[in-house]
Image (cartoon, rainbow, N blue to C red; front, side):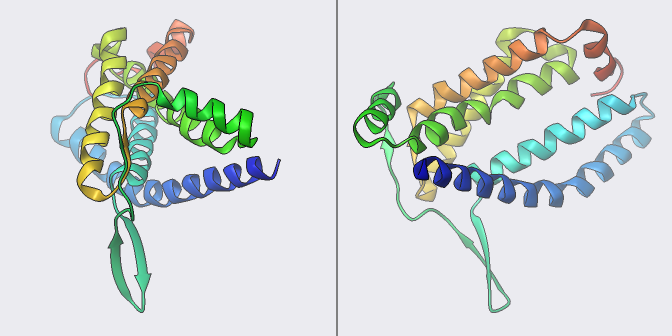
Length: 201
């Protein structure tokens, strides 16, 4: 139980860090969208704009925890800190055996909650929001492919930053995007239509 508590503390810390960056990007998103709408004289709707804002806020939060260096302020000096070690796993499905062994032999649930479940859950919005907001993503291969390509880009960009890159993250993230698309497809059609804008992206 103590291990689960530690895992939850870690997850909460990730969420808090994400919220910081999401708050920073919010006014920028609002200003950019306002300028785009005015310049193009485009028609949109309130729910579409709410969805756009939430999606790009989440995307910023996600990237802040995966490819952006951590920010530290010491003595009035801003420092950007990369990871302190690098590990590369090219063996597919190693996460399954490692998670199983951690639970069975060590009674540790943290690898399951963070490495396994966490990698799936954090990509659910990537499969959910694009088809909800844009018609061109209303196909499984495009929505799920977006999740795969984003995950691949993150893993590649982590290589020069002394962070861990793992092929298992790639399929777990893609699975998360797949679940997000399934959630989208199960929404009522009237609800889905209310979030789309035919004239503006």
